[in-house]
Image 1 (cartoon, rainbow, N blue to C red):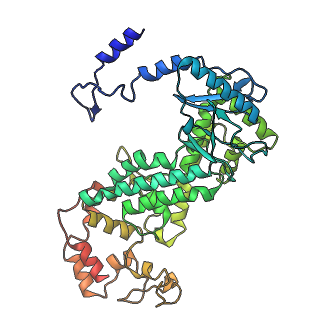
Image 2 (tube, rainbow, N blue to C red):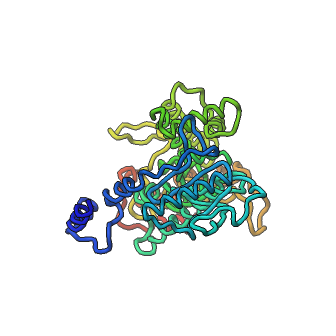
Length: 465
């Protein structure tokens, strides 16, 4: 066996496959590379006889005993009493001695869920004759559990918010080298690098406490604002209607429902299926459980009782689209977007609440952001500028929309349509609009994702308005 393994690893050669390009073969000179398929299988075979004996304080899920969990060589022991946990530690100590496994005691931690019994002290739990340190939180398989908080996953939210924020800032730092990040590429980077942290473990960590979700939502909002080129006061519904990205709360619910669908497909002796049966029993007697948390979240969404989980997933997507549509329809900021049509895959036009809009494909960043500002009420016209009170105290509270009149004609509200197509009181503005085609190029080009090579029109708009 050992001779076969030695021959196997001496003969191993590696290649890197990236974008359909295959690197030359190379040899690992520092041991087995991460991802080697034989490595975890060999460890599982070596560790497969780790079977602690049954104990009165073990946890039972249905008829299945759960006293230990292993993720590769990272092991968790669980028990309902201090004495039971120490017995598990004694067994682990004896097993590791027989198998020549070296346990890293300084990295081992004890965590008590809930109040610590008065009988428990620093010397209660020992391993290899050394006391084990206590901790209030521990991260296992990417999920942080915390004791002493109202929500056991409170620290998980905080850590993932910190990770997602750092990655989002790093992604935008590339603008120093490549210029403005294009929305299409920015969306791909969001889905591959930021979204995994925002949705990490959302299948089991349900968003019952919206205060914990708020920091994650803020990161999503800030990222999309920067990607489109909007200011922080921009309407949040625009962030999703223009990029096709689901609001975070809805996306997390959809992933949780897909996890439920997966659980329902498992055989009855699977641990997750056993946990589901325990969850059902808790739900029926009115106790706190995962299913109860999921029901609380679903009650916040306006739809009827579905026939199946698959139908429920579709209903959540429809609810997300309706939420974005209603926000736009009920705000004067979204007047230009109500009922608009979006080209489909076959070229047909249909209303689509969430989609990556084609004007965001314009290659010149200044033109793209000028278009976004005009369409999404993020411009310098009175319709937007007089919406908010002056933070410097130079103006009284916000002016009602019907009083935000045009600075030239003084008859109609100074909004995008009026300034570009209706007002004729300023000869300079009229000549600028009709003298050339540089203003109206978006009407002819942005649906095709094209733009002229250069134009000073955005600067002229800013200077005049």
